[in-house]
Amino acid sequence: MLETYWDPVWLTLKLALLTTTVLLMVGTPIAWWLARSRHWSRQPIAAMVALPLVLPPTVLGFYLLLVLGPNGWVGQLTQSMGLGLLPFTFEGLVVASVLYSLPFTVQPLQNAFEAISEGFLEAAATLRAGPVDRFFFVVIPLARNGFITASVLTFAHTIGEFGVILMIGGNIPGETKVLSVAIYDHVESLEYTQAHWLSAGMVAFSFIVLVTLYALNGRTRMGAFR
Amino acid sequence: MTTPNIHARFSCTYPDFNLNVDVSMPGSGITALFGASGCGKTTLLRCMAGLQKTDGHLSVLGDIWQSDTHFTPVHQRPLAYVFQETHLFPHLSVHKNLTFGQRRVADRDRKITIEEAVSWLGLESLMARMPSGLSGGERQRVAIARALLTSPRLLLMDEPLSALDQPSKQDILPYLERLRDHLAIPILYVSHSVNEVARLANHIVMMKHGRIVAQGPLQETLARVDQPFQLEDEAGIIVQATLDEIDTRWHLARFRFDGGELWLRQDERLNVGEKARIQVLARDVSIALSPHRDQSIQNLLQAQVDQVETDVSPGTTLVRLMAGNTPFLARLTSRSAAQLGLAPGQSVWLQIKSVALVD
Image (cartoon, each protein chain N blue to C red):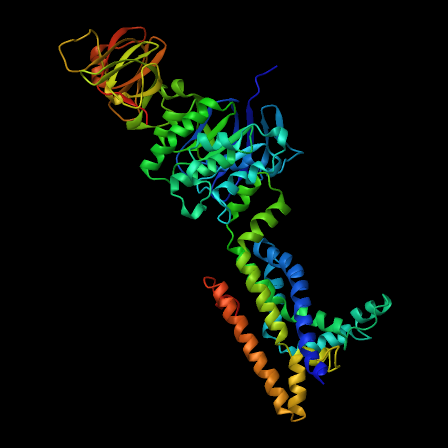
């Protein structure tokens, strides 16, 4: 009984942690490129990255279901690689979460990168630091607040997602049944006590996360990314 | 074998101006890149550093850094660059800023130790501080030391003093003079201040509208009657002199130079035997055909007229004279020049109303 009660919580944390990790690796180069490039495709790509902010999660979930499904091109690719199909698996959730939370990683990082004066990079270059060296020893430390904001927001946003998960993951205990879905389930079955515990826990968690974020990052403007 | 030096050729087109230079500069001492703001001197410096990519050719002390087929990236060039805004890393302490470049240079190429750099620039008490807690002058000294610690073969300085107030400038200038006299590497120094150039430079390159309009050794070039530097009221020459005697009764100091002696007000900072640069402005020099002792001017020098040229401003004439091997400039009204009948080769007396140590 206790086990099933905590299952969705662990699953949610695992999903959020994995999504945040993947997104920091994927989102950092995208954000760097968006912050520094003058290429014509910068605006369209920035818009694509921001799409999950404005689209209903069901739209994203619907297309993911099609693309990752047995007739979608990604689905056929994963099948031919012997990975099977992603929808209704934990891995599928990670893929969906990464796409859904992308702007929450990229936008704070992009803002932080744009705020770094080109002069610091030029100074580092004249001090013998090559491009990769400059990124790790100048850009990352100077964008520290951006990385904290991006990680916390991505983590929190992944925990709060519902629509995309329902579309692509369904409701498989231990595999895709995350917190938000579990609460929905409890309410559907009129188990209000359990729904209360989980919901109150989410409210408290989200509040603590945001308070921590504001405290850590007091001087950067939150308005810039929502 | 030719003496190793610096040769730069760059041409590029920008919406607002074109850079078009082809210049050789000495491989030692301070070369001042001088000109009004917007003349392209900073752009030239950035092109030489590789911070700005343009078509061109650059060789430094025998190494080719850029050619039609080759471009050495900035971080692989053995140069150091001091920026006007310092660009100290705000997340690192002074000590870590200093070692940032040094750590990236191979051991065998490190010629300047951290102790040397710290003592040259007087940073002993600042090492643990963060850049945000430093004054403008302190920041610039840290930036210079940080640059030197890469043991560069060429030091580029982009108006390092222009963002500072007058007292901070006065603080830093002696450090720069010390570097000029102790470092064996060439320094390119961008400036629009005649005073800084007069005090620091050995060689001067004048730029205008992205082109080089004149260049040469400082003393000779400042003394040209065609005045390529268009200093107008500030036109004048520099005398390299040695302090010979201090007259404590009258608070005067006698300086000896190649061509005579000059008396200046005593300056506590200088001791007998030390070298100094003395500036004599053309407007402070008048000419007499015979020595007049019955007058207030203390500095009288015998000299020979070398060139007489009509000045840029109407009604005035610029006269170049030689006292020994030292050139002087005198600005006269054209009428007095005609009345004296000045002609090259003529022996005359210079009456110098005012002389000053350059600082």
